[in-house]
Amino acid sequence: MEDEQAQHMDGLAVEGCPRCPSLVDSRSRIVNGTGPADADVLFVGEAPGAQEDAEGEPFVGRSGSVLDEQLRTVGLERESVRITNCVRCRPPDNRDPSTEELEHCRGYLEAEIDRVDPDVVVTLGKVPGEHLLGRSVAVTKEAGSVEEVRIGDTPRPVLICLHPAATLYDRSQEPAFAETIREAAAIAGVSPTDEGGQSRLGEY
Ligand code: URA
Image (tube, rainbow, N blue to C red):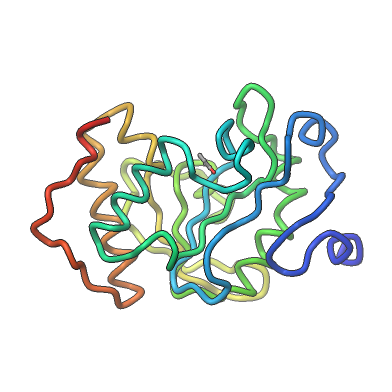
């Protein structure tokens, strides 16, 4: 598997992976992570959606706008963080990735986390939280908590966060989402530039 992985990945970007036949059929392209290879904060989502599949970049749809806005509020520009997904190909009909698909992509995710070596890994939503923590996660309850988790060979702080889309479905989740992103910035040693700034999350 390691040789096969090396054939498709340089540590950050995957090319031409054939492991999941149904995702090979449904994807327009592989959506690799974006952001600096030495970012202090690494966000992990579930899988690309339609817009990510079309543009080849994670979190560029409505969820991405929510994430971007909150990042700006705490002084973390999108360009300064790494953003990736558990699975790099869009599942058909926006279904959740299967356990097998998550496992197929796991080595790529671990290699990317190893390479970036961030101060904190932030899981966006239930699927990445459970995938990296290896247990069931009640995201709404546990959002904001940090757990040390062995990823590959290295213990790393993992910060549980709501998926940004949760704030689109339920506005009452906005403060918890904002607070967790603020916490990620604090762990990375970034102080907010816009403390008094008025959040525009409520416009969604
Ligand atoms: N949701 C995700 O989990 N990942 C994306 O890239 C976009 C939306």
